[in-house]
Amino acid sequence: GKGEFDLNDSHLSTQIEGQLDAGLLTQWLPGLSQASGNISVNGNIDVGEDGSRIRGEARAENVFLSGQYLTPPVTSLNGRIVFQDSKIEIPSLTASKGNGLVDLIGTIDLQPDVDLPISEQDPSVAIRANIRSAMFRWPQPLFDTVETNIEGQIELVGKSRPYLLNGD
Image 1 (tube, helix red, strand yellow):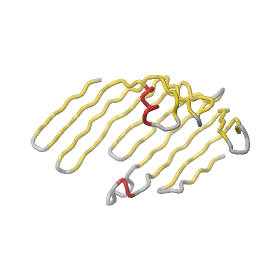
Image 2 (image 1 turned 30 degrees about the horizontal axis):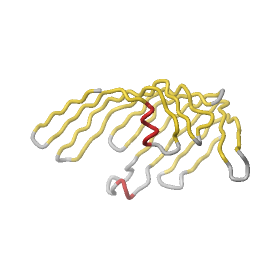
Image 3 (image 1 turned 90 degrees about the horizontal axis):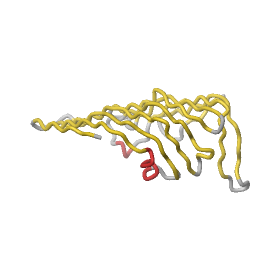
Image 4 (image 1 turned 180 degrees about the vertical axis):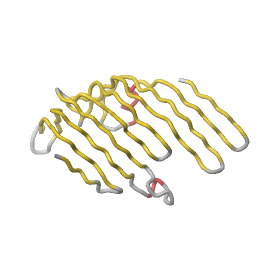
């Protein structure tokens, strides 16, 4: 990757551009035991007297994810995530799950109320998943596992916890 710093008066501007091995995600996400593939990142961080601004995007290319709750694994994950200050936009993420497909779009606002610190509020969430014959398995205390193929559309929405999960 590469970075560029511009120190001007009381302003710091940093440009970031690089490639990440998706395997690094296992260090940051509990329950994720394996990851591979490429993630391209580019963006800007500006810090000045009026606060900080973060803008950029991450692109996933042929990412593989496996873990306790990702059985069968997510394969061929491709798409884009856009960062703008406290907002995260998912214009499109597509992946294979079992013999099916999952498409995600939506937004997450980490600081919906700018008058409160991020640590004192829940993110605002609006994410939609279009699922086509994707297989999901999860461990259950009374059974070894529950396994099912899911077909339909699921939405996770809300301004604070508990979020509403609905779909058809």
